[in-house]
Image (cartoon, rainbow, N blue to C red):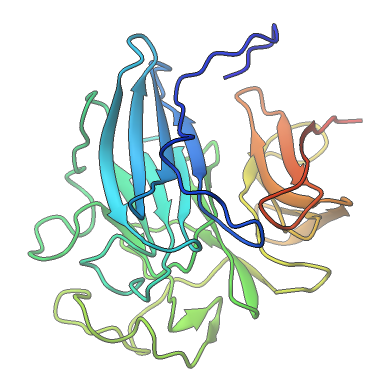
Length: 310
């Protein structure tokens, strides 16, 4: 952690716990961090040497680290791993799907999880999570059917937004719905994929196998991969400020496009930066920050830029 004064404090050192990165392509490593609403604990999500995605809690007063959750992944891609606290005080965690488990409710892969982490040292299941009480289904799941949910954020009304990149077809922005099925691998955006992976086997909704007749939650916005100049949708932020109306949804494409949606989900703004956009985020004061890199792979020089209103 780096303070405004320039001093640096290490709260979590993962250098000996994460696998070495493939210089050609790799999505593993420290995936995200989130501060608790009381600002007393830090949560981190990372990929471990054992092939698990790991959620760890760090007590900022005692520096004690506690592992809360391990999810077997064993892949160098589709790790997901973005976190945000909702207005209900619960931690929402996105998990990618490298193994065709997005429609499998006995697996945490390809899901958005909702966890009660208000007690230090362990997590609990919120009683109103949609799959609580169903034998064999994971009660941590809040929504499912995601490919690799790369971003999650909440606006001032508590509405959750999730960004989910496609294969080579469509990138999508979703509104988070309790118990919602977002369709992967049956659908990508609003389009049926024709893929068979992830549509059979495992445990699905009680009494309902995963098929193309069950209801899906469609994205509020989608665009073709690579158009215009896109590569993959990036993590996102919510902006309320003088230059754009309140509740404008700001997101980015890895290829350098910065985009904005109005409250009624119309594209109202698009800009281009000459870098690869890793993430876009917002602080408590509403300031937008953009993380960029000069390389599409895990190597290269990174930069964090603050967006100024002029």
